[in-house]
Amino acid sequence: MVKYVVAEQLVGKEVVTNDGFDLGKFVDAEINEVTGKLTTLLVEPNVDSSFVNKLDIKDGKLKLGYGAVIAVNDFIVIDRKAL
Image 1 (cartoon, one colour):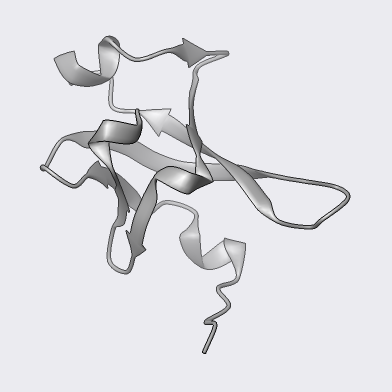
Image 2 (cartoon, rainbow, N blue to C red; image 1 turned 90 degrees about the horizontal axis):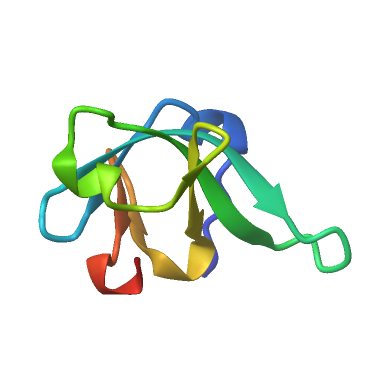
């Protein structure tokens, strides 16, 4: 059974890797206009993290492909290998 989540419920959630790195907070998403599927998470990066500073940050946001999402609960968990 597919569980639907309202995007409003995700805003502000911490985004972490599966091995514990804090990437930042979820702020928005990009949606494919044709299919309606979520394609990219936009994350306000944790600037205090040396790991995050090594990632590609554009326009002040970290863009993470939706395929990297492992779980969404109290945190949004991203597979570090997909970064």
